[in-house]
Image (cartoon, rainbow, N blue to C red; front, side):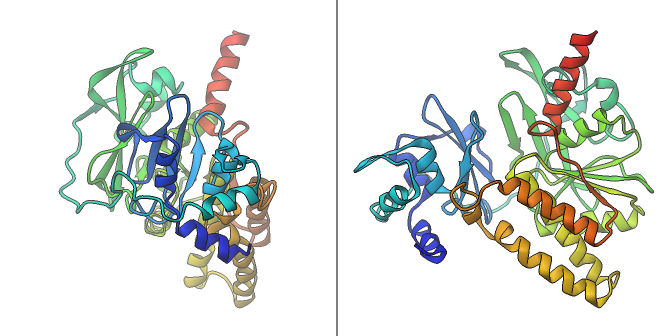
Length: 372
């Protein structure tokens, strides 16, 4: 089948209905507007929307425990769902099975975004030693009390029972033009944006500081972890809270100019989504520079070539499954490095040794304790 035919087939089958057909249930407590969490008892997956919180059908999934992921075709193969002719273990069987499911019932719940009301923030207090970040994410309390983070990372007044004892959840305020328009709450197995948070436009960032390096990560925890790992005491840390949107990139670039930013470090996770995160920032930064006449015309032509190379990765989920392209993560990371070198950009792509920088920090702390 052609790519267009596969896209058409997937558009006619609800991923949510497919999951419910095979016994997966929505975990509302762990779901957000950008990501739905499903469980079948023994396993758990995240379903990520491509085009906003009300568009989960042409989505991609990630298994919490195995890190497998991809579109609904890859899901059928990874799970070896039982089809009419036995377990589905290849692309052809998966497509054949999907063709038989185009009349599935509607999902049992709606993912339509409700009209926004006023954002009412959680009450927050300074971070203490019995918070989630310190106890479970190996972030040093002394580092969190640095001027960079002191007024940008908080915790809940209430402590919550977890398998590791009573912990305060941590709060990350998200800003638009220095005003709080959202809050992210993090605790053990808990990730939640406060109702009516503007998660498509707001960004979390550390204290404003001029002439500093910029560190852009997928999550605030990874950004802070990178800072602690590298003993950074005067950097400017930013996160989009996941995949980054154009509405979030514009204020980031504006802050870079306003604060006379120095070097930029992109800190996506060491996976396909993280590589695409880095690539998105690089390409948008280049387009921004062209709009500001920072680059000459032949640079514009060269950027067009790179944009064409990047388009399959950023367009939709078609290139995610392993049957489309192998070593996709490495291909995107290599493309990012080529763009940086070609345009002599003042940017570094920092790739975690493990899956992300918080895991790097955890292993570093464990190693220090072992040596000690």
